[in-house]
Image (cartoon, rainbow over all chains, first blue to last red; front, side, top):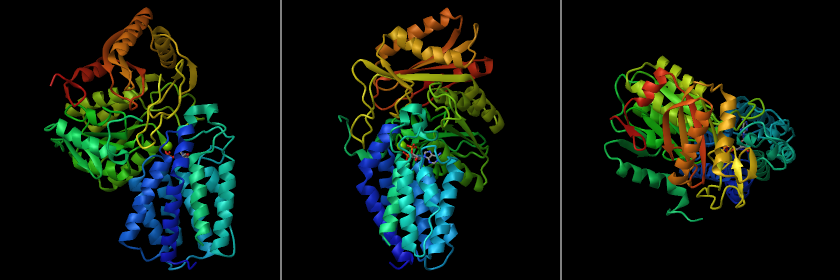
Length: 202
Length: 333
Ligand SMILES: Nc1ncnc2c1ncn2[C@@H]1O[C@H](COP(=O)(O)OP(=O)(O)O)[C@@H](O)[C@H]1O
Ligand SMILES: [Mg+2]
C-alpha cells in the first residue's frame, strides 16, 4: 500500500471491521474475567470512528490517528476507551505532520503509543492486561512498514497468549485473584487483533 | 433473556427519556452526551457535586440528583464508565462558580475517564477535585489488584457531601467530608443469581441452584469465592464479619447500617436480612443510629444483597438527616 492518509484511513476501517467480526469473542473473554462489555464498547467506538471518516478524511496520517483517538476517548468509556485513546493520540503526536509513513516512523509511533498506555494505566508486563501484548509489539523493527507491522502483530499475538496462565493484577480481572488464571485477557486479545489487521492492510 | 426493551443498543437513552418525563421540575436530562442534572442548576455560589458510572445500578446515580444530593450524574452504557466529554458537559452545566467535586467509584475505567475529564475541566479554569470511593472489603490487598471497588458507600457519600454543599460548605469542606466518609465506610455483597447485560443477552456468570457468590461486585464480575447457599443468618454473618474485621467498628461505635438489594431481591427478604444484621450488631455492642433499607445500588436484576456500615459522628449524622429531594431519596424537603 501507499502510506498516506488515505491508506491509513483504509487500515482503520479494516480494523473496525475486524473488531466488529470479533465482537462476540471479546465479549465472551471479558465475561470470563471482567464484565462482558469489552467487545461491545470497542465495536461502538470504532463504529463512530468509521462514521467520522465517512464525513471527511483528514489529510495526514497523524490527523487520521488523532481523529481515532478523540473518538475512542469520547465514545468508548470503560478502561479500554482512555487507554486506546491515549495510544492513538501518542502515536499521532509521534508521527508529526509528514504526508507519508516510513518504517522508522511506525516504530517510533508504536513505542510512543505503548509508553502512553503504560503511563495512563500503570500496568507492567505480567499484570495480565493489554500491556502484555503491546510492550513486545513496541520492539518491532523492519525495513518496510509492512515488515514492522507484521513483527508487531506476531509479538502481540504471542504476548496475548502469554496472558492465559497469569493472575491479573490490574483492571477488573484482578478482583478475581487466582480465579483469573487460565483465561486470555480481552484487552490483550483486542490489541493483537488491531495490530494484525494493520499488518494485513499493508 | 427476558427484558422490557425495544433495542439493547438504545436502552440507556430510552430509559433517560422516561426518567425525564417521570420527574418534571426535578431533573433536566440531555441525551448527547447523556447528563442528568438538577432542573435548577447551576446553583450560584454552591459547590457542585457530580458523579457518574455505568448504567444498570439504578437508582444510582441519576436517582440521587436533586437538592441536597447530586447536581449532576453521568450515566455510561450498561456497566461501562461514562466518557470524559460526558463528565465535562455535566460539570459545565452545573458549575455554580464555587468549584466542583467529582465522586468516582474505584474502577480502572471510571478512574481513567474521570481523570481525563478533570484535566479538561481544569483547563477550562474550573476548580475541580476528585474523591475516589473504595469501600468494598471483598477485594483485598491493593498492591495485587486494582484496589477495592466503590459500592454501597457511594450512596452514603453522595447524600452526606450533597447535604454539606447544599448548606453552603466550601469545596475544601466538601472534599474533607467526602474523605471522612471514605475512611469510615465499608461494604460487602453476595449474589444468588447473575445479572444479564442487555447487549450480551445471557447471564454474566452461572450459579447453580445451591450456590452463592460471596464478595460480589455490582457489574456481574464474579466475586471472591463461590460457596454453598446458606440461610439468612449465615449470609448476613458472612457479610458482616469481614466488614467488622476491616475497620475497628468497636463496641459503642455509632453506625449507619445500609441494607441494599442488588435489584432482584425483594424487600421481604431484605427486611428479614436487615433485622438479622441489627441483631448481630446489637450483640456486639454496636449502636445502629441510622439505617437505609432498599434497592439503591443495584446490578440490573441480580438477586443478592450488600451491607454497608458507616461510622457516624455528630457532623456526619446531621448531614445524613438534612433534607434531600431526589427521585430515590426524599425526606425533610
Ligand atoms: N491499568 C490497566 N492498564 C492497561 N490495561 C488495562 C488496565 N486495566 C484494564 N486494562 C485492559 O482493559 C481491558 C478491559 O477493557 P474494558 O472491558 O473495555 O474495560 P472495563 O474493565 O472498564 O470493563 C482488560 O482486558 C485489560 O487488557
Ligand atoms: Mg469490561
